[in-house]
Figure 1: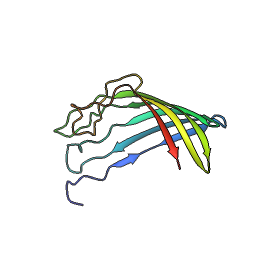
Figure 2: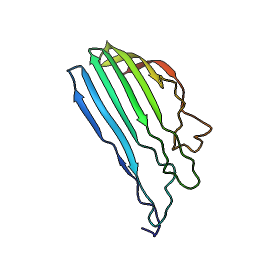
Figure 3: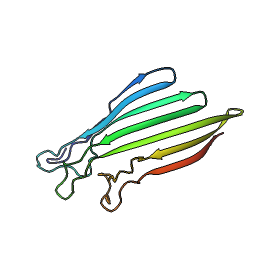
Figure 4: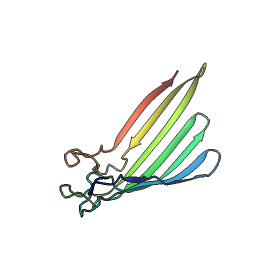
Length: 147
């Protein structure tokens, strides 16, 4: 490795899940990137901030749903030419119903809501983060066909 070259970032993704019942599961998750530049007081650019969340999954027969909340923390360990990025909270939910249409095929109808609190949020890893925030409150209704 060259003198002063950045070390490879170390990404940690811990998760801890608990099966509450045959139909329900609760998962605690998070990730964090730890990196530094040898022989320098600067930070590497566009390193994602830490994140910590909780997810509840439920499924009974053809009906499934989930609710997910996570906190993305502020990123204040930035390179000299970067700006800090504020943290944000995200709340998402999905509900779906699967129909068996025979011969190993299925049809699923789903609705997914993201950023349900309509929080203004910015992705620190984006080159255009200040001009392009993450999507606001959003609902997607869809149909998925497995064949």
